[in-house]
Amino acid sequence: MQSIKWSNGRLTLLNQTLLPGIVDYIECGDYRRVAEAIRRLEVRGAPAIGAAAAFGLVLGARELAGQSLDFREALRQIADELRQTRPTAVNLFWAINRMLSAADKAPSTVSPVELLALLEQEALRIMEEDREVNGRIAQHGLVLFPHAVEAVLTHCNAGALATVDIGTALGVIRQGWQAGKFKRVFADETRPLLQGARLTAWELKEDGIPVTLITDSMAGWVMKQKKVAAVIVGADRIATNGDVANKIGTYSVAVLARQHGIPFYVAAPVSTFDFSIAGGDEIPIEERNPQEVTAIGGTLIAPDGIDVFNPAFDVTPAELVSAIITERGVLRPPYGPAIRSLRK
Ligand SMILES: CSC[C@H]1O[C@H](OP(=O)(O)O)[C@H](O)[C@@H]1O
Image (cartoon, rainbow, N blue to C red; front, side):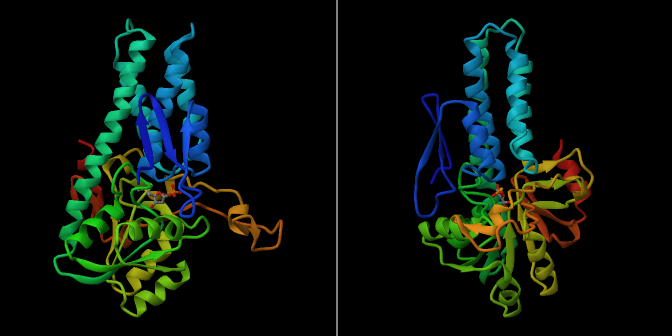
């Protein structure tokens, strides 16, 4: 299952809001449709959002190439529109900045058409690098399982649908299962948008990996009953001190894991680290439409107009994180020095 496809200058996104029941695709003819897809979570997951935005800039550059205007300034305006789609996943900003940097490095004499070709190559590199990074994260994750365990738990979806390839947390899970490190995965449904139930359970079932779906409120009891030996989740932004922003509910899982003496692992590429912030309290947390909480599939599950708090992410403090699995290896606390070394 490919979340994103670029072929013959056309961007195709798997519409994740319709999964698992409907497998349908969105053909993005211009950057505005890409921005809408990110806002709607038709494409979602930090690395996937970054890659989609990169190709959104390519579509924008193609639109500009035929116009007589300040190409680079107009491209920066399109980049700003893409930046405003979602605030938490740092990969969005990392990818956009990388694309603009590629354009800025080009000589001022290059034509818009030549810049367009250069931007397309950079977006393709971002996609290919994510593919390679997924594989390296999966490999490094194996060291965390020297002995086979019964099962692991994951929250939300950090799989193929959140990246360009096999995923981050689900990449580790796929590799671990293939290596016989565990026999089953417990997947939190992940209210309110159910990325666990709709996406992770679907991905793992498609791969033939035994998966048990649970509601978010069951995670503690599953741990109390010793049904899982580790937690593996993804991330949307990691601060220099190791604080981790991830889907809402992740912090609760981390606290429960600590209570039950279960290791809590985070799998994330270096592109998810935000070296500009010291701690998690600087991470912007997206708040989304209250109707995501008060309705499911258009059916009201709460009084209409009820007050709602709907943060899409929370921040797990570094002291609750047992290890961070990156493509450069496994980081252990204290995270500061190890994370700063990633920057080089
Ligand atoms: C590999 S990043 C996946 C990360 O992104 C998800 O958020 P969303 O579905 O809102 O894009 C969630 O936090 C996942 O852990």
